[in-house]
Length: 210
Length: 182
Image 1 (cartoon, rainbow over the protein chains, first blue to last red):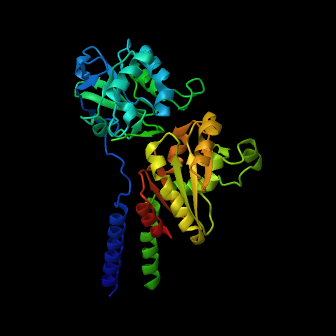
Image 2: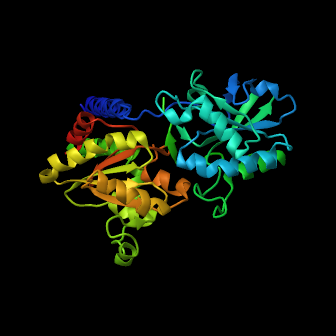
Image 3: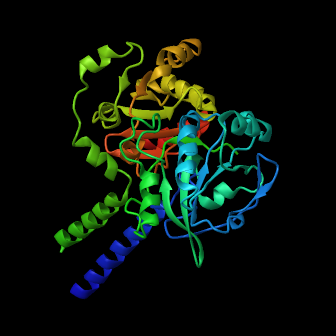
């Protein structure tokens, strides 16, 4: 009798858990899957604002890449432009160039046409490639959900390994008010041969328009 | 025997409860404090500017109302597109104690020049709050562990029942989700 009751109880418990776990898996968010820390990031071949195609594999001597999904007019992206230029200047010569990618589809977000990207790059004096991703959807493979959204990659034997995902720093509005430079700290740790201590942060941003 | 059964059942339910996204809200309710009136007075009477800890009191109210908290900005096109749905739900469900709060993520220097004119022009009736807190990495996970940080984003909650959505809504979709919580 006792054994039977226990079996019944266990059955009820297991059934309950299954019922609830299936309930939990009901996904009400459209968040992309994308990369986690330690994953190998895909290379790509995207059109740059200078008319040439750019791939990560073009950078033979790079130690890694600062891949930033950004766009022309999102206020968070605009507020980050000077910081992105400064990051490129600080880290390109150390082996970590910036690769900026605009993931927005201009038919949904008319401010993000290739022509306007060229203007933006010229006006701001971008020192890094600014790539048009409307067709290839590289952003989806990475799992970028907004602009700006940073992926720090380190070139290793297996390929480009994701080392940091998130925000540039802890103040999306103003570089001078930032107390912690998440991305720069992560690159400096890699340059010192150390593991990245803060691997992921949350960045506020404009949803990618596709 | 019966006692064991009940205990086991409670155990099962409680363990499921832990996995729900409400974990964040439990953390938040510890810091719940009534909003400081001087904060309101400093900012626009129409749209208070609050830091996250101040805003948090609106995300963790424990009463019999259902709150729909929508994170938006005047420059965010999908946000602007879905605002009428939130306004309509607020009007239709006001007697069911549903309150809509629109949390603007516009930059604080745009409050007078963009946010308030936008509210006037579109005759927004819901309460609007400007979140003036630049350290997004600190507060995004407190809003929801599921939030990547993109807007629009919405919370619907009633007491401890809480759902988070990183997506856009039509009126029908919003009403459907609300009905699940009411």
